[in-house]
Image (cartoon, rainbow, N blue to C red; front, side):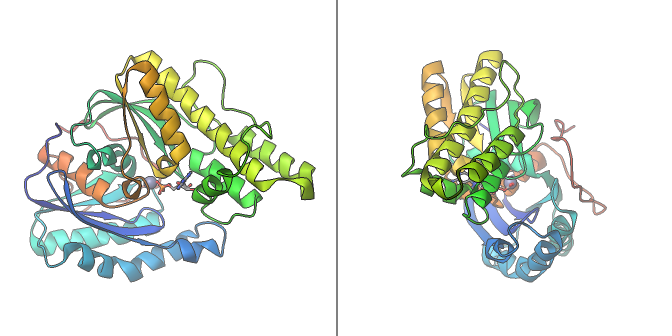
Length: 334
Ligand code: KG4
Ligand code: ZN
């Protein structure tokens, strides 16, 4: 069982296009508020960093007020890396101001550590070691979680992330942004074998590549023109991404001998992927865990929980904490 900071920890997340705040106590989520900018970015077909930062400035205090609901936090955790620096700065500045005014400790949290820890919202006794697949709009990584806060990256994408592959495919099919959910919905009435699309890198490697799929999907849409059956195309696209993710998880289970697998990040909301990985784990006698959907996509409860683990281990940040667009997963504290 993971060791949490005693008291109420406020989490703040502004790394991309959700302004989120949450209060947790131990593993219990007392509040989790997410204000999404998705409707605003939709009209541009993707995230505009400057607009994202300005929208965080508008929403951060109302979101904090709703999450705190009069509570005084005992500690504060805030995403400070990786992400859009302008967007991250809004959350980090708010966290510093609150830490100063309440005179409580605060900690900068790595966004991907937040996703890794998000499974604790589903199962507080998630076993370690385990293999975690992080599949989001910006990242696709296989990580061996040796114990909480002790990570080894086993593999990662060499180009696009899995969520990006969904989003780019959705754009080609005219489904708007972000596309993962829309592709899943359309694919329900489609034949996944109708169109042949490439799978990721073959063999034992634990790295991913989705750029070949992007090119093949573009060619498919151009070649088929008016004849294209969009539901079949969505199902074929989803099958390619799900097959690719599943085959690399299988490699990771075989290589590590791990007896548990977790699926986290926005793409974990995909029910076909969840089913496939559940089946895979069943065949390998491994336990499968994925958070409830609301904690798969970006949220602040996962940041509060990750911060709580680090604060309990004596890891704190100082007021000169900075924001970083790229950053490796953090080392074990101490
Ligand atoms: O973790 P997340 O909320 O933000 C990042 O940290 O990137 O992930 C967002 C990604 C988007 O690419 C979105 O299309 C994808 O998650 N996504 C899905 C589904 N719901 C969200 N992909 C496939 N199926 C879904 N149901
Ligand atoms: Zn994320």
